[in-house]
Structure formats: C-alpha cells, structure tokens
Image (cartoon, rainbow over all chains, first blue to last red):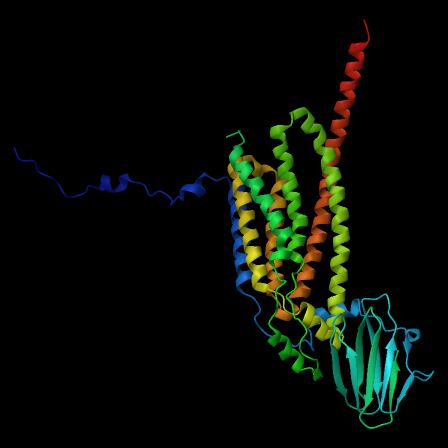
Length: 174
Length: 260
C-alpha cells in the first residue's frame, strides 16, 4: 500500500514553534553585575586602543608652547638671578652694563635648578651663553630694544655680550 | 563553584607580578637610545639661535610607566595577601592581615609622597626650561624633546595585556572575587591608569610628551596615596578584631590556668 505524504502545513503546525529570543551562550550565563563589569572592561580596552592609535602627530613650535604649559610656568616660574650673584667689569651699580666691544658677565652658582637673567638692550648685541645642563654654548643676536631671558642652571655661568656697534648699553631687568 | 581554582589564581598572581616588574624595568626598555638630531635642528633653526653641533641628543625614559607600579603594587599585594591564606593557617592569616596591610599602606603612602614631589620637581624643571626661550628651550629639547612614544606604547600595551590576563584569571579562579568591591575598584583603577598614560602620551605633539608624562606620573602618585589611605583605613577594623580575639584568647588561657 502506497504511503501518501501531505506536503501542506496545517495552521496548528505553523503556530507550534514559538520564537525564542537570541541568546549568546556566554552572556546568558553571566549575572547582571558580571555583565556590567564586562562592559566596563570592554569600554576601557576600546579607550586604550583609541588612546594608543590616535596620537597627535603634529609638530609643535617650542617657542610658543600651549596654554597649559604656560599656566604651569606661571604657577612655578623660574626665579630671577640674584643681583649679588652677578659680577662683571662693565657692570655699574645702577644695574647697567656699559660695554665697549664685549663684556663677560659672571653668574655665581646657585641653589635653584633653573634661574633667569633678564636683559634689555639699547643697541644691537650678540649674547653667548651656556645652554643649561649641557656643554654647548648658544649664541643669539638681539635687535635694539629687545628684552631677553638667559636661562642658567645651578652651576656658575659666564655670559658674553658683544656689541654690534660699540659702545652699547644693556640693562639688567630685575 | 565555591572552591578556589589554584592554578588560575597562581596565573593571576604571576600576571600581576610581571606587570609590576615590567613597570619597574621600563626605564631600561623605554628611551636611553640616541634621538633623531634632525628634529632638534629643525626646531632650533626657527629660534634664530646658533648651537654648535656635536651634542648628544638622547631619548628620555619617562617616569609615568614606573609610577604605574605604585598602583599595581597594591594589586599585587592584595592578591599575595589572599594567596598567603593558602599557605598560612587561617587563624594566623586573619590576625596578621590587618597589621601587614597597615604597614604596607604606610610604606606605600610615604614612597608615593616622595615620588610625587620628585615628579612635581621634574615637571617644574621641564616647564621652566621650555619657557626660558631660547637657551632653556634648547636644553629642554635636547634632554626631553624626543620622547620615545612608540616604545612607551608597546610597554603600555604589554601592561594592558598582563592586567587583562590578571583580571580574567582572577575571575576564572573564583567568580566570587567579583563581589569584592574593593578588588574590582582596584582592578578598574589600574586599567584606567593605563588608559590615562596612553592618552596623555598621545594627546600632545612629540616634543611635549615628556611634560604630559610627568603629569601622568603625578596623577598616579596621587591615586596611589588615596589607595594607600583606603587600605590603611580599611585595615583598622581587622586590627581591632585581631586584638580583641588575641585578648579574649589570652583571658581564656589565664582562666583555664587558675585551679578550681
């Protein structure tokens, strides 16, 4: 006797299987606190990858540092060199350096890591000073009327000032 | 479910220990090598300053990654204290836990305070040199201007991996560790500290990374001090309980010794 198969689906068959929510095997086993912690860890890891991957590749001008660096500098700026630590053959008691040709200004060793010697020139000059914490000597040409800071480390330093047109006058700005 | 799975716990301890060792040894791994003098020459050329060539420009090692050890050593200490419970008898462990914790917390706070002042001093020195244009700026660029951001990122990635392994192994060892809010907060703190270091290394242009690195170090030292205080305060009830238990025991022994 031949068996007849019915291909049509009855209404009851269609309704028989209820739709189950999608369940991820591991997540469904976790408690609520475990899920929250897992999410926190995932967020931290993603933030880390962003932090490592998205670096600021731009070049900054060291002469014009950003605001937060200036703010820190304003809070903890370098102290000025004490007048008693400065000696020079061209130095007058009123704090002016009257230079004929060139003059060497000596700054004694101090206790601060970095100190500043502020100069204001009337004429064009060239300043030669040691680079702090380095063996090299830097040289900078200044225009008339320019104010200039020489950074000096804790060691004693000799700063050479050369006039472009002798004689010239340079003031120590306190 | 209730048992501590020892192999996973040991793996967690090893991962925490390795993280601390990598952080402490990072000064030998990051920086130290010669930097590209071209970058310095390019910057200095714009200052109108002549500096004779020949000076060695080096890569600074940075201080933020070693300072991460101040936080991670707390994690290692906490896990080691838990691990000690497997070796030391419960009674002794319970009584010593509080005392050891408060001693460790005091040592941590003092160390972090000293390191905080060192980091602040270094930050001030860097900033004052950078702002003392042009000779100070040149000095800053020579000493700190070439931070090896790539090397630091590699070390931070390794640390992140070790910390994630630590967290995973800890949960695998015993799921109830998740219920320990202090431990969870500590693990999240160390993970976030890693992100903060990576973020501060990446947010500014290359020549300023040493400054943000020092800022990160200051943040880590402050976080370590806060955690040290939390540990110290948290250990007080344990010490009080240990003292009470010891006193009660001594009283019991004395009463037993008196003949009826």
